[in-house]
Length: 433
Ligand code: URA
Ligand code: CA
Image (cartoon, rainbow, N blue to C red; front, side, top):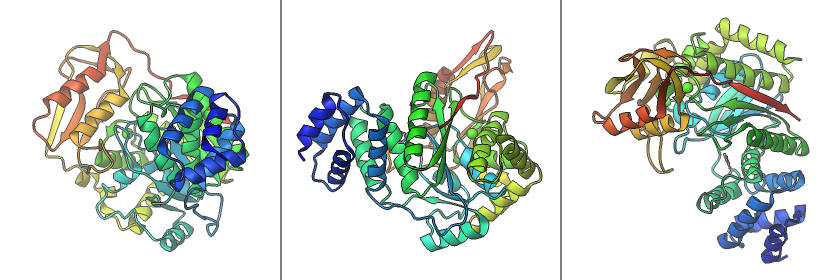
């Protein structure tokens, strides 16, 4: 097989075979095919698209380019959850203990944040002592005993995706539905999932800017799931404003604890119930979505889910006392209010720009190598649709730097106050293949 012929085939809009796709991914991973040929192929895929069969073949080839985690020693259906990108998305911290408390097996591998989107691992590390590096044996033992553990993903998980993603980033081929779908699904399959719940976000800051594109991405991923024998459900949700009220690592841990205590923001709680009930049904712990939701509601209101979170923190070496005393986590040196400049109704809270502001405070990293400051971030006091008076606080800034005028300016630009505003719809659609 010659790579140049395969590039030509895709350039002319023909479908690549399973064998051809396996050849490309194997030889790109081991360095036999150079970046410049893969760059040309990526651009051809960008313009010519791929069939569901090609995308599934690509997904499986990427999944098998490195370690494939074997979760078969664990009882039950292993359900994983993934978001295509959000700001202030605290759901995993809440969902992991919540669904585990009703019997779902949660053997979760999470990632770190990059750019303006946060990562679950960084948030968990805001809890003093919390260990995200655990041996395979310990991980399996923990999940069998407690139903839940959240750890960092193995270094050799889907290495082809790491190379492809870096190349897409510099060749303007990130925003391609077959490439995004195969990138996400390959990592879920390599991480050992039997079933997958996807949160496909729409908004200025998300990959998908409108409902049509989001539906296509969601349908593509559920089709891959079906062809690869992993039951997959995709929830299409809104990310035009941040989810919940906290953006930043310690702040989001506090928000997760508040939510598990029954005092969380409405949109975040709703998102957890919607995603969680799909996970519960896929794991065969309830027959219907309604029954699953009732189970989750009972677990949250009775404190069972909160106790599961404590157990998870304890198992992973973290300081459990933060659950009863979350204020311990709020250690930023400066706490400043951002006053509204006029009366009106909040009509815009741009998630991506607020994510960038939080990153500039130190809550996120611009490059993989940077370190982050767990204590800093933003806490929204108003959401879209809320009335505000001149001088009233729009949000609270937690900073370890005193001089943040340029960040405050950026935040003001990301917020609009108008005469009227429409509250965004949180859940746009649910796609079940
Ligand atoms: N997230 C991923 O993991 N890959 C993509 O291509 C896009 C979002
Ligand atoms: Ca949040």
